[in-house]
Image (tube, rainbow, N blue to C red; front, top):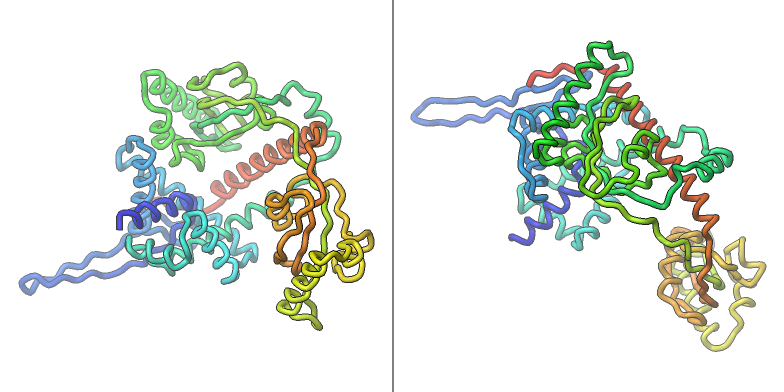
Length: 437
């Protein structure tokens, strides 16, 4: 059972940002010598027309504490944990409400697919995942509901990002020409003290004083992760402020300038941003990867199910075609005659040099396993049944293409984060929230 416990903790770590669900108030009655005592779950926060209960808060704190201990870090005082975790629950609940109001729905099939991915990431079958959770007292139906809520929030955030204007070629050119576009990447952690856009000068001074006090505590030896858990107002606070790897080119200018030339382990002085004040810790530095990539040249044949062809008949047909190729028939001729791939059928199924991932996940996974001249086994995707013959592989310098793609992605990531941060601040400031902790 010890193994099951470890597996469950891994699952919980993957779901650290999930929206915990209400543990509805229950009455507990005990008889001791004829006397009765009743315990009622109390409300710790009103969030619009919803509530957060003490039992929800306690459960979320327990999960976070397990994660902090697993990282080998010290826990802040209980009162600090309650304040931080409650704020996370409030923001999560508000996001879920916005998703529901926006008409976002999640099907049972979506939840099943997500559960299968969680199980695979933990190297478990779905049944083993369920057993591992229930052995630790986690109700599987509640777990499913958490997964559903997380998908809803994720889709809402994706909708916000997709509503942004597209990155223009001019913006990419400016990024490539700027000093900010460098090959260095930084592993960062952060402590954030937010300042509302409509803050008064007194509120700004108060936030500035608070970040200065935190900086002094870091200078006196307080662990950065402990300070983030205790004080940071960023969504990643309870993960010790972990931001992850970021290219200097993708960071706001004030951040990029502050960390330029720093060494792992160093901490920046408090930085003023539109969102408030930030302290960054540089945990590691690395150079970006090489620009050489493998490209593939192959022939492709697709048989798609239709009203006249069942999936099973499509599978049988692709297997028959594979056997004919092995017996010496020309792949190109068969592709022209039978393939349902409209983009390659007329040219004998030819897929000229293509980079990794450009033809989709399923094809990429197969070509990576083949040697030049080798014929794949039939494999299935949403489009139907495929057959691939790998013709050749080459190493190509796609430096310019990759640099432009990186610059575009950096700009998009930066704008996406800024847009989500703005949305979160406005959502929190405009919503009715009453804390009764």
